Image 1 (cartoon, rainbow, N blue to C red):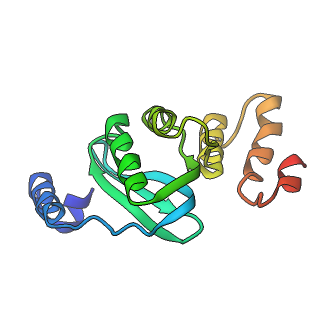
Image 2: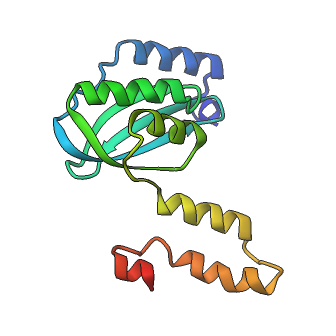
Length: 158
């Protein structure tokens, strides 16, 4: 897709991105002993992604990585690097992918790890389709659409 907009081949784009990333400095993490980390990947096609580690309280990107998958070994290393930089997680929110879950369990086995509600809603709407055929699907779709405005525990319980 990017190649059609830029009129460059996929190989040239990959080469340019790799060159840029080789000279890219990792961010300087800010100390936070009570970090609520949000971890997500932004994919470029099916083969390349940026893993982004955001601090929800400081509104700061604590770390990022260019990768070809959401590999648990790389995520474990990133979480260890953040710990060494005094970014200590008290909770983690992610898309719930297997690599991320495994990494969090290895580095932070006793903290809450929740799935991002936007990802829950997106998956729910994908599985339900736009025009569910069953009555249960027709009743569930409007409920799934109300997930993202939830901001507190009473709204969640309701």
